[in-house]
Length: 116
Figure (tube, rainbow, N blue to C red):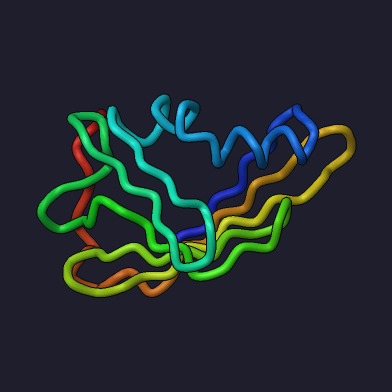
């Protein structure tokens, strides 16, 4: 299980909108983005800066969305579907993003993405 918390000094609504903006995603998720942000949709990332390899799928499948609160995504890693939960919580005037990535395959224990 991977846990990550990020505090951002911007209001929740702004963080949510920018997090799901394909133009902004280009800054952190790859050189080519296509995003169909709805339950059953997907976010695809391609290009040399994308966090993808033969072992890591180049898309997240959107399983559920609670507007301004949570995204439930599926990401295929080493042949297994893994769940990625991204929560957005107001904290004072800012926002806390909490990422939980669970059930990562044991075979990925010593696997790391190359820096990009």
